[in-house]
Length: 113
Length: 111
Image 1 (spheres, rainbow over the protein chains, first blue to last red):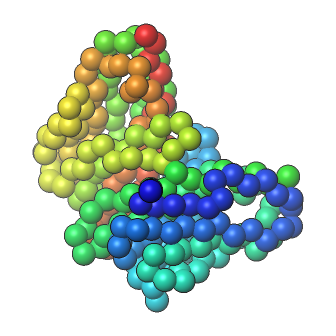
Image 2 (tube, rainbow over the protein chains, first blue to last red; image 1 turned 180 degrees about the vertical axis):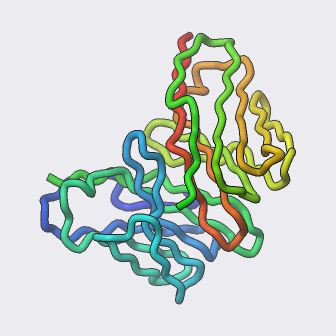
């Protein structure tokens, strides 16, 4: 089983719909992150959480919200999806105590029509 | 904000050739990382560099943390078809800061 699991892997939806992307991890890491990947733009940070009670905005948080339901779960919501939010979304985790690099899930491909 | 300038954007090479890509910034960083992304998957860590001037190898891959702490390079020797993918550099200032990513180098290898 994957250490960082993202669901769904693919989603097509319409403008204005509310969407939730979920991430769960079995690595026991305290830190979790949501990134967005667009062709030619690399990975951009949306939100991050260093523990269950900590939520921080990243570079491109407008139009998104997150919830850290437990140490192992971090969900990303698009309250009212718009076409320019069509992208590949990645969840990542890291162990803050050991200061190790981040581990990524396999991504959710989201298309908004 | 902090930016990483990664080059080249893409490379198309023959199997067996060596590859070099680099990442530069106007800001100083204390950790440099190199990730590879295969099609349909998330980025996977290749090499982590924690000390200025550090040179680290992982099989056919070699990466260096620039002495000025503003750059890093990744070399791949004797490329093979499975080296195909997008390579990202990333950097951060401390364990409490987030990663900044470069825009990636797409590598294509012809058999």
